[in-house]
Image: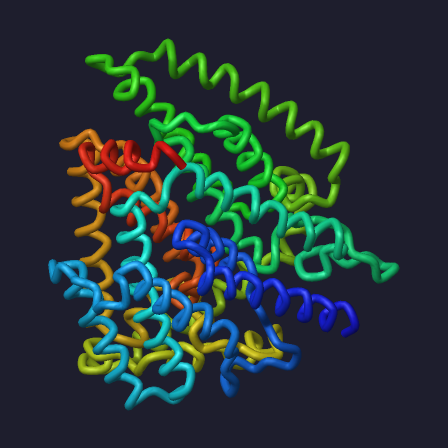
Length: 451
């Protein structure tokens, strides 16, 4: 308990320092503080999600981004373009608020509605920041190195009590490199920063070094689905670089093979180094799964299947009205009973069903599921048009991250974490892709060339 209290005070100090930066610093640096704040999740000792409110996290997710949005608009209400995406999201928020009335978890339902609204506020912040040239590659690089510094502090200075593997002697081994948020959130954040650095025509100092550091940090984090996300981003960049960036009429295999011939030896060398220097890394566990099958027993795959089975069983017993309207916002907490509750002292109803599609159908019925799927289809089609019709490099970046977003929706609960490192990363790339076309990209870049 001693180390958890120590970590709490460190988190609290970092949170208030970054919060002051968001409020008082010039807008460019306030945005950087906002990104770094996503890497600091304050969890008070004894916090119970079903009966408590984390005021620091609510401040970080609602108050601070709202204040930053007002600063960006000079304390005026922002002008919102009410297209399909904004209308669909507003409808989802409204329906989630109404469906609290028949939910067994009212407080958690109110939190979830606030989370959904916060997603919209964060997107508006990043949208305005990209348009005004306040966000650029320099801020992305600063956010990367700042987050790596926080991860180094938590992992190597404090001894990694949050995300380490406890040994028999009670000491912690630095198995997962992460700041004051979970590796499953930090990994996607790094992947999004990697996409922004790769899909950019800016050539700032330390860009190449930052890309290498980002890739190495992803390996140290050890989040398996983040490595898959990063692999998709790198593969997309290789294909687009070979065809579009080099402005060839067709896909040339020679540049692509050259990149692969460089990446494969680097990966093998890194793999051998990790085996020697960090034998307890989760990446080593993943690659050695066939030779050490007992590793699979400590994973989360088994209880996820139990949760999915419980959701599907509950849905199969519902009436048509129940399937259409759902059982209420945050009612997914009902699934965490029996064996699932034995694994966790406190189960957050908003983080119980690790699949946002199943969760949407269970809690909001066909209405919520239809709105969510419709938004994904709309976003994918719009980004495809920006990437391959406008030849927007920002569109390529956002399109490359879409498979990672889909994967996160299938296996995690990103909707319950606005303001987390993961959600900020996704919104940063999506707003980049939707905000900056070919012309506006160069306008923002030139306007920001001086700093």
